[in-house]
Structures are given as structure tokens and as C-alpha cells.
Length: 306
Image 1: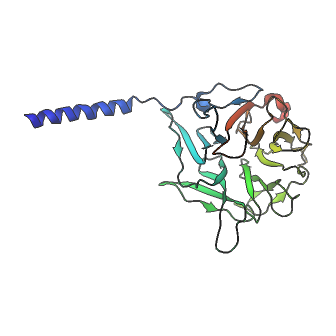
Image 2 (image 1 turned 30 degrees about the horizontal axis):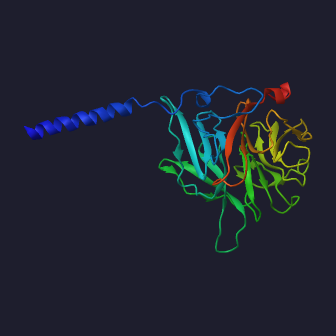
Image 3 (image 1 turned 180 degrees about the horizontal axis):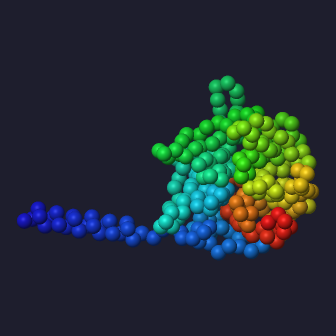
């Protein structure tokens, strides 16, 4: 009789645990994790949910998939994703196969790959800065990092990148052929591969032009630079692509978006409505603070580019 009573008690506990699990609220509900869309002034994205405001809090590099159903970001040194299911957004999951010394993670438009920079040593050459790596989604989870090699990686350092809808790569690099610092480069995706890296000489200066966020149709781009005349730190600039393929003179996006701090690593949503970027107070994730911001682009773009 005592054993039967114990079994009943344990069954009740297990059933109670099950009902608790079934009633657990989703992490968030609705487009863009249920956040109210911003206007022309940049706002912290998902404060208290994704971005933890305050000293030594670090969230950066927020990117959405093209369908808006997957969000990837970096918290301190770890990369996380959350996905929108029928029950709502899942609790962010740490991608454990991405090492802690990663930089500028970026989710591919189809949400099947995460690109990032990684500093490493190998047996044939000395430390060569940050090379470009990729983790691919598999039926068994996220695979180990794959070195993408030339023309995407080089003897310099690659970081801050984005992909157009046709998988053309836009990135910044300190490789040879540039102006000696961070420069903007473009790797067209042709015949299912990236065959060459093209220096965007018309846009580059000697003031570390980097972190390009390309529009999905490649009609415009936002990047960061420390060129004179900004508000402080790195500022975000907009350049439009003309019908003949040339780029307009970059324009500082102004005080509605930029700040006295470092504003960098732009990401443009698939519908071209919003710009996501990172604002940081310093460069050390273990000591300084960073947050993900977003802003509506409508007032910054000519009507034909929206």
C-alpha cells in the first residue's frame, strides 16, 4: 500500500511538471520579436529581452534571416539564435560550435549558415589576423567551422560583412591591394562560387571604411568609417548604387542614427525597411558595453530605393 501511494505521488509530480512545461510562455511573440517598429531615430532593439542595458553588457551584430523568422546575435563572446515557430520565438540557443574568439557573426539570408571572423594559428604560417569562417546548419545541429579561404580570406584581416540576395559577399579587409587599413571589398557569387574579391576603390579612403551592410538587391549600402566630420568614433554612411553600377558619394546618416560612440556593422532587412547596427562604448567585450540598435530607413532613402 505504501509503495502504491508513493507511485501515485510521483505520478502526480511528473504530471504537474509536464503541465508546467506545456504552459511555458514563448520567449517572444510577433514579427521582430514582438517589438514596436522604430521611426527615423535609432532605438535599442528589444531592451530587456535581447539587449541588457547597462555597464559591461554586450550584445552586438543582430541579423535577421530573409523571411524574418530567425534572429542571430552575439552576447559577450557567444553567438545565439532564436527562431519564430507556431508557438512563438524560441529561447535563444547558444551555437556551441562557434569559438569564443569569433568576431562579427552574420546570419545568411536562408538561415542555414552563420559567417564570422576567427583569429587562429595554423602549422604553415604565423598568425594572420581574422579570416572568414562559416558554420552550416545540418540535420544534427550546427557543424564545425569551415575556413572559406581565398578569395574571401587573405593574409590580412576580414570582418564586418553581409550578403546580397544572390549571395554576393560584401566585406571589409586589411588585405593587400587596399589603402593600408580597413577597406570595403565585393566578392560576386558566380557559378555557385566566389571567384574574386574586388576593391571598391571609389568608396574607400584612408579612414577605415568597413562593416558594409548591403541591401538585398544591391541598390544601396551602409558602412562605417572614422573619416573626419563625423559625430565621434565610427559613424554610419549611406551610398546609393546608380543605374550604371557606380556608387554615389557616401553621406553621413546624421545624429538620428550616429552618436559620439562607435556605430558599426550595418545589416539591412530583406524588405529594406530597417537598418540594424551595433553601438559600442569601447572595444573590449569583457569590460565595455554594446547594444543592438534599429531604425526605419524610409526617411533616409530616395523613394525609388525604398
